[in-house]
Length: 348
Length: 219
Image (cartoon, rainbow over all chains, first blue to last red; front, side, top):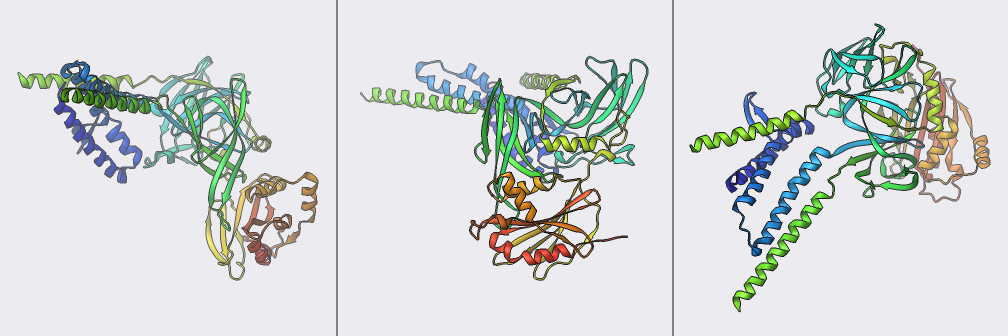
């Protein structure tokens, strides 16, 4: 596992994967192509021939690079620059690993005057439940729908009822208001609207079926025993460590048209008892801890209100590529510095 | 022996990668979090309006009735003013007109559900959209009092709002707007013309003609 040939073979295979995945996304869509070629360990062609995916290839490269460094490296002071360069290269892999497994991309859409402390996923959904009496803050229990299947039991936390999934389709249509039919998945996963038929079973033997659909604008209120709960099938929510309120959204239009030329959001961010106003616009995101909020787009809602959409990126490893680049650059400086000194010594 | 070593290495890699894949399959456990919702006064008003239409506490197996649809089911007809080019709309927007190549305007007819925010809120929002400064409440009310109410050929009452009247000191190239608002059944319809102040003033009469031509189509 310390063979340079393996690293070269992996580089060639990665090049092929990038080309193949880029061409495939035309038919399969960007998300499906990324999942098949780059995020997988294996994928099949013609239905049965397995080929290594991007993740497996990168793991092999990483392990090989570590082994090559341990086995083949010549530990001399004159080679310390090479060692640092290798550490920098390994740091890129670490940065990629942290980013891939830790990054969360979501969005936050706010009409003027409104605020929230959660952002919404683009593609993932959740079944959310909260006590109906609560307005703000709500204590939400949420089940990710990725693993929903027929007759799956969802245990609720701290309450005396269970929820069963009777039907669930990642992309669905409601029939006559009472049933669901499955639709083919969209190439663009954000266009899928899921639907599910669920059943509440209480400790007292009561059974309450209900239907939830992703396009619904309101939660469904259900009385269970003496309590009322709100149920919603909605895009997965990511809690934020701050509350963001949109104070003013400004848009400049091209004269004589309704086409936007530029737009910006004046927001109030509140955290740890601190409140401050920030302007978010193109190339001027808001950064807070691991979060970066970009001005993404806008919309007009059914009430004619302007809604600002901010892209929210949580990336604990966002500085790692810069650190890896610095280490690599430092290694190059050290190595060329040492080579320069050695060369001048040998001339004397 | 060499073959054995290669197969051995492959099995190690396969086991490793399968192990990682298996670890990623998690159990379904509920996530819990606190959700803070900061509502605007408009949101609270509309929430009250929506709640009254829902059967409280009733197990609801239909989401279609709750999916607020803002697209209008009203059928209109109108007569495009001379020199205006009509383009079909989509969704909330029923139609778009453009006119005047030298000093262009764009005019749209949009139908929204419910009160759509109310007259005052919409006028203030439009003023913000064309970068007009906020004016004191008394001046705003005086401006509203002067706005015209007209009747269309179909008997519809339309409130005209001419923002050029507040732009006497603005240059001719400043963005401007004239709008007409009418309420029909449970819908609010906006007829809105935007362009430079000069263009909007030039096309004001055509805008009136469009508003006056509005009629409901009855089956």
